[in-house]
Length: 166
Image 1 (tube, rainbow, N blue to C red):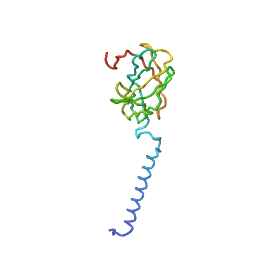
Image 2: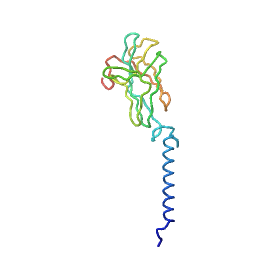
Image 3: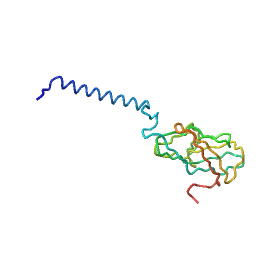
């Protein structure tokens, strides 16, 4: 039978120190984005798709709003820029009950969706090269912080159009 002498204490203390070092090192690696995560959420890279995109027909030569949903079946990302070869500028905006403000980036949550919809977050499209007509499609280039750029064709719909409603 072993006694409760110093060697047992040393072994326990050494094991505790090794465990603390391993756990502390792991926390540092996670915080620094090491281990192949390069800052992404623990569940890997974002897997993005775009659905329900449309632009209500704007007044002749005027600004237009753009709406769409970015679905994400992977890790977190951010929409950081939107552009179009057929418009001078496309900016991202957030509306509240009394204001509309331009935003620099929009979060795309892990395993969630970023929804740009009437009365909330949306795109403002200005400086059309050609006056849009019903049925036209506008190319939008959506640039994400981690995923890069995704190009989508967005149809011009009647002013009263709502996705999912006939």
